[in-house]
Length: 303
Image (cartoon, rainbow, N blue to C red; front, side, top):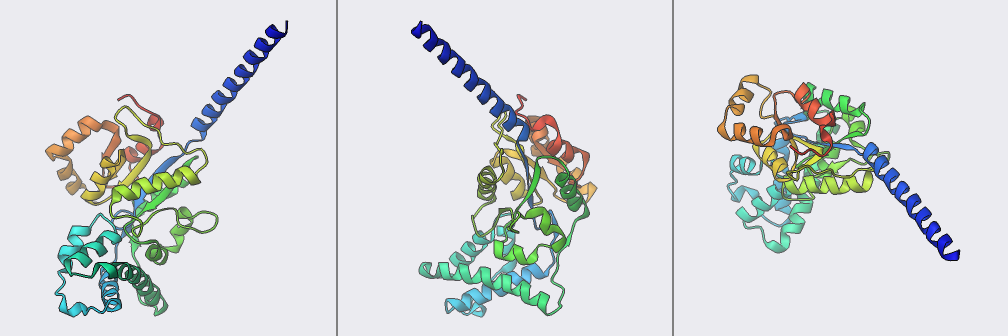
């Protein structure tokens, strides 16, 4: 009789634990977040030309900190800006230092001074009542507002700007969308990595720690179906695909330019192969993008 009672108790507790695990899994699935990662410059914000002047100022201050006269370097700014677009400020600094022979043992000081100087530039411009402000694209603001009212959907920043700089640059009326209860910015930032792929992975790992119930869901191609990355540069687009997340590319707000991009052979192939995992649009609050973000397709898919 004792043996039968022991077996009966074992079956009872196993059944209870199985029900609890199933309930936890169901709850986790129900509460799982959709994480939208949006690029800042060119996607959310129509970057002011003054932002590029701040980079030049920061480079000058950083050079002074390591006893280098920037006027002796003959810096080709256009080439550097072109080569680092769609990457991060840390990558910008690395390229600058290697190209202009900043000593390796001074690169840490150079980087630290660069971030500080650029943040100070924006802070001083505001205090002097100058107009260094970026403007923000209406379609991007509308998308953020829509997502903020949708259950278990959150929008974080992915930006090549270091966090010190984006804290100064980001418009006040948008801060509430991108901050936690302690007013800390949510996302990943240009002082944390060299590439956008790394920033995307940092943001996902961070979300797993900070968003209760967030679990990346994978489909048959290994794409994370409940993470959507939105960017404007070609590098952004391929960074999203390389990171295996759903990707929205907004190469231009011009309808004709987007049509030209969509007509490219490699885009036609990618759209046929990847289907709903990519969108190329001229408005990021379009029906196609909202469907990608908010629909049930964010569950693991077999297609």
